[in-house]
Image 1 (spheres, rainbow, N blue to C red):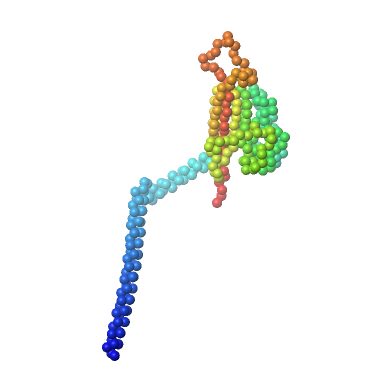
Image 2: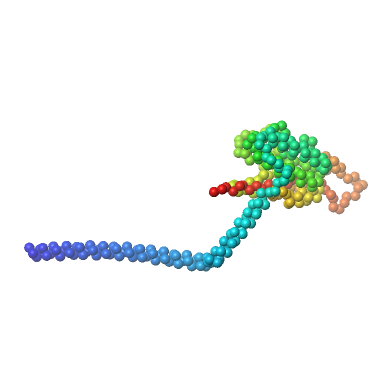
Length: 296
């Protein structure tokens, strides 16, 4: 009996020792795996350290200060560019009308004065020329379009006055884009004013959602090359930020010259080596407008 009891105790002790040994082995395996993971992370950290050390410039306190100085200078340049792109509108803009009726009278005054300016400069325009605003010869735009149409009216005035000062033979057409809110609607364009509008090729536009907006115009006129040159020179010093997006030039045939009052020379008149030809020009201009920065 005592012998059986001793054997049972020995077996229990062996079982307990086996359990302890197994537990120790499991703990050792877990510790080994943890050590391997830590060594792997350490090696990755060393590789990242070496990669950063190889960067140019290296990440040091001196270089950090230099980068901060460059960033501050870049921000100053950016602020100056934003200020320059805000434009420098003069007295031509006046105060923005609040109601369609106010803008109607504003546009009517613009059309009347611009026709008179063209007559004084001997620049031919159609008797009923409306300079892209024939849609509003009898009424103002819809209330939600007043700011956009007024902005176009201001830009059109600058553009037409610059062209007239360039002394072309005639101003054929001035077209504008449809005011932006109108583009979002499914309503058809008002009848009889299709000639007011054109569509700017999106590939030519600088618009960027949330950053840059613009108003584009297409002006067509006739004259000698000097008129185009003078017009483009005036655009380079414009009070509003703009970019010339497209330019077309076409020589006028004889019948169109006759319609403009320029008869072809007689057969007995010698033709100069460099003829002072009359051409038709079409210039697409995009007025740039920065979208106000949103406050955080």
